Image (tube, rainbow, N blue to C red; front, side, top):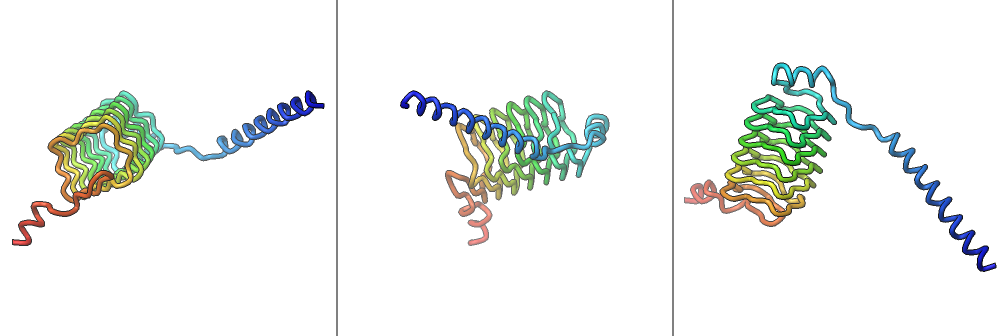
Length: 192
């Protein structure tokens, strides 16, 4: 009887595991994935400008996108692994869930962009402008923000690990490890 109970228990766990996997697989196939417009990608690569484009879920790995105009573009879930976006205009862009690992983003314009749930790993944002950027629940690790402009940026819910903000202008920024919204030079001047 004990042998039978052990077998039945193992057998029922195996069936439960298999049925759970089948159920989860069904959900995985039914979840819509972002789909970009191939014409928009062609326009970006040929003309180097594609404001208001839909590039959600686009594979932009290893591309040199220096100086491109992606103002107000939908770049949610886009993969920028090892891309170069130096001096590019991504102001107002939606980068929700985007993957920005080992990206060179020197002097990039990300003013008012949305990076909620984005993964930013070992990226270089030296001299970037991120005025009013909403980071939401982004994960940022080992990235450089030297001399970056982060005025009024909302970083209050990010996960931040080992980032370098040397020389960054944080006036008005709301960060997970500090509130820089008060005591700015402009506030002191207006008080006098």
